[in-house]
Amino acid sequence: MLDGWGARYKMLEDGRRQIVSLLLPGDLCDPFCFLLHRADHGVAALTAIKVAEVGRGQFEEIALDNPEITKAMWINALMTASIQRKWCVNLGRRTALERLSHLFCELYHRLRKVGLVSNSGFHFPVTQLELADATGLTMVHTNRILREMRRKGLIELQRRQLIVPDLGALERICAFDPSYLHPAAQEAL
Image (cartoon, rainbow, N blue to C red; front, side, top):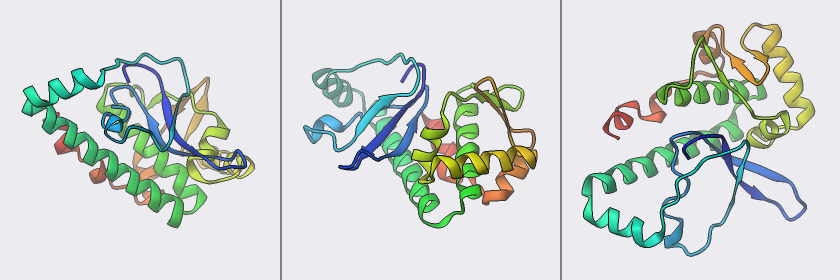
């Protein structure tokens, strides 16, 4: 993903959607999917996106000829799995306020790593429906929690910008520990 935001999602037979991850600039979008011959999920653009596509043959050739790139791909796969496990914990054990706080902290850290955080904020094109689908909440409850977060001064949302006035306060709400994002491994990439 070179530019823009995307999402991996699963659809239920009745049309309900669960967003299972957000794709940000710099992310790899299912590089090993071709090994299974069929994806078990969908990928959608949440904004206008720019991607670099690598075909199966070219991908295999690069992986075989460049062990350092293969290692980076494995590191990326392990980091993606770590984030996925954290999302499972968020859905299963965190309150609505903790879920949204944790998601915002994660996005802040991931976007800061690729230079997309400035003045304590970042471009945030995600709709309330998409937030609800990512956090397992109803849209009404998502709206209620966002209002509460604004009232408490934890976030500001303006013109598709999410501003985090006090990252430490937001992190304390959800006991955020960025170690699952494996910053040392990211340095190796």
